[in-house]
View 1 (tube, rainbow, N blue to C red):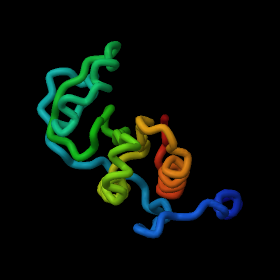
View 2 (cartoon, one colour; view 1 turned 90 degrees about the vertical axis):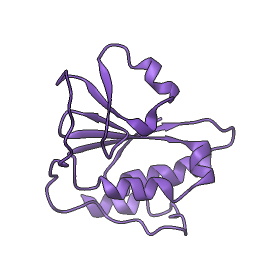
View 3 (cartoon, rainbow, N blue to C red; view 1 turned 120 degrees about the horizontal axis):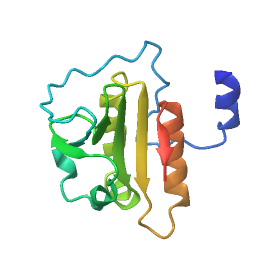
Length: 140
């Protein structure tokens, strides 16, 4: 199944600034980060996300700032990274290093991509391919 999937997306060119790695073969292990939380149902938000406008839309579940590797952590098996297309154009290697840091720590990894540029089709194609090949779920 994996080879058919790779063949289907073979026509998409990988950005030359970073080699894309294949998904990990070992099972995901929880990242050991000590977090003091008052509510076990709260979404943990990295302090680097302070001021992110996305936070005002997280209303139906509590959230709190924490010292975590991911931008957002939902339970022990799920994390998310936030990426603005404009930021990606300025620092294209940033997201790849962030994805690599979290590659084996979670069963579900979500890349939340904010489209804040007019002509973003090529950039989104690159982001999409990196997400697929690294076993991340992409949301736009």
